[in-house]
Image (tube, rainbow, N blue to C red; front, side, top):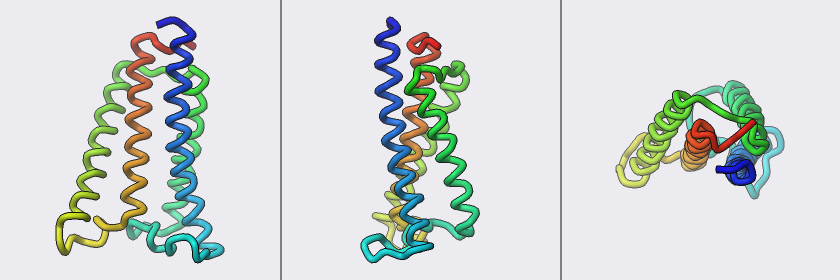
Length: 152
């Protein structure tokens, strides 16, 4: 693949990563807004909470994830993010397991009567699908970059 095609490949994957990052940032902002300045047009604060993790810890982790997602996404867009074959394999495996687990969570919430509430906290469940998709797109980019599609 020539350099122009490599950059097009990086730009399309960078755009997909940016879209998923924006979705996740909107979710983080909406929950923070409900905590600080509740809005009738947003779901209740607790609808965003899928675990018993204290909000301050959840918010800290989410902000760290967003920072990493932004940094990596920009590098992918610029064609400056390359990874080894091992990294590509690990991200593919982790992303696949994460996606399967996230889909299983949704399926249990939909089809198992009396399942614990964690399975039917829909906002967190949906955003785990977003994050798993982000990892899988990055894995696809890494597989392409290790084949020489992306040149720094």
